[in-house]
Length: 338
Image (cartoon, rainbow, N blue to C red; front, side):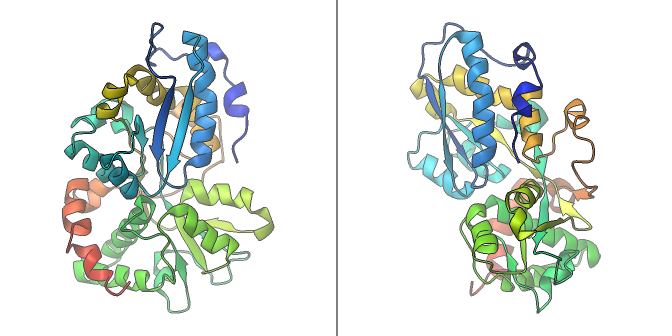
């Protein structure tokens, strides 16, 4: 759960990081819109609460960061169709690339911020019911006939695409790179999902509140948060033997900020996510960060995990988009009838 430690453990002077962009003579809009993925509401509510006083301390201005949340593929389409996002904080690279190809985001957007413009990371993990009655430990358990799995629709949710790719990577590893066996594995996994919600929050509601399914697959940041949020349900995180690094790319939407005159505010907001204060808030929300000093403040918070990457397993996001998610790609082939 998020606490106020992220705000109180660092002095305001420390929050004003050297790399953070400010414009003391900024005369643009005092509101910006952050268009984000479905399950990031609480995280960015906390990040906004950290950023707003920093901006005021530096500029004297009161600003507001509004939020919009849904599956990121849907969000990217909405921006192209007219939703005026000043910034995006997505959960998959391909959806930012869609905006870049449409002329909304710079082609070299990953070079604009540290860590390829990803302020924090996570990976697909499992959330099981009290006592783990189905004894679910790894990806192979999710394709058993007696197990029902909950995760969103990979056609609309970046969260679900990471789940799909992580399962595919596991199957490739278990079957010595055999693509046909990997396809059969994810096809069986998809057949074990009784209902596909459009986003991660809907899938959580299905699993926790409607008590449908035996296991929820979502980002570790979510499973650890849900352990605290749903203590009465006694749900528990299970980390599989291997999972897929999930990065959370951010970008300024150039076409919108240049029209609105909000670039300095939008850039400063994303800069804040990479400061020690912004990183601390992310870890408070159970996201992992690459800043060792921040991570060292939270000993024992995260279990050990072996992660593989999209680049190592699939050859990068462009190849994933072409091979897996393009029309007629592998996802379409194994998603028949769903």
